Image (cartoon, rainbow, N blue to C red; front, side, top):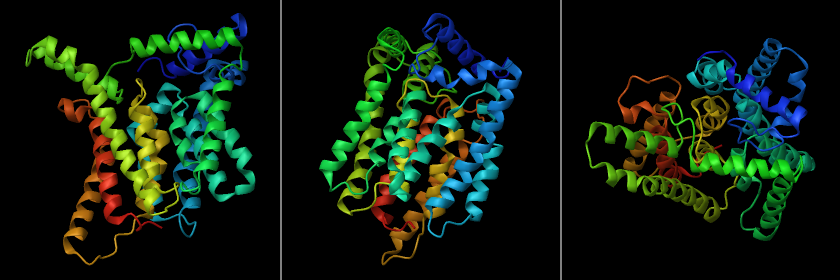
Length: 367
């Protein structure tokens, strides 16, 4: 895409608008108000140097969240060959290169979110720092908010959990007023416009909204079915896919609750990751660069010991193979494939469907 670093150029424009006019909401800006504050240091230098600094930060943090973070939360705290494979594959993946080319910063956002989760679960004395990092990640890009349910050690202890989640939601809401009520009103107006008339509907936007819109447009263009029928039920189709995802998430959450597993486990981490990628109306393929870690943790932790039933063993191996194949398919640009294989959404939903089944069969076999 041309020019290189085009997204960074746009974000710096939002920040300069904030500094000059008091509001960053010009053009297609629908991010939280404090997102523009994040880029203020990069306005002190040239565009080329800002892009260079952001690229170096992204590359360093990518190694951290893809290699170091999974190693720290895995049993033995060691760098395994599986983690090295994900790191090397990720460095040449479509999502990571797309992230660098556009001058995006999803890697930074997820480094903040994963850092918050690590501190919360592994260093209880640093939990206030964990809360701060989580709030910052949400205020830069909203989608880390789905990881809120992972800030718990035991879902049976529901009263403290509800108080903690409520407090974090309240702090995040209050932070939206960080630049004043006028800027907050501008943010709400921009967000409503984006939700009503989503921009960036293209095959590289793997959100449910974008995928369904593209499929309906393709069907209508070829005259396969009556146009009014699909156009009328497009919202219903989107809603059905969202319900499907939340049903899969609910099954995983229920198993965690019934088996008294830690909410910070690979299965639930995978489902929250998928939710963060498919639920927003705009979710471009470059976000995959920041989401390799949960899949690396899952495959690094999974142990498929023999069970008492042969069919369970065979079926489990098959599920893991399909899941790995679906995820590795997202590492490549495949815009010349048929429509259902062209977008990454079907692969993500397939992984989301496999995860609760595999968890029901092998839920305790993670280390």
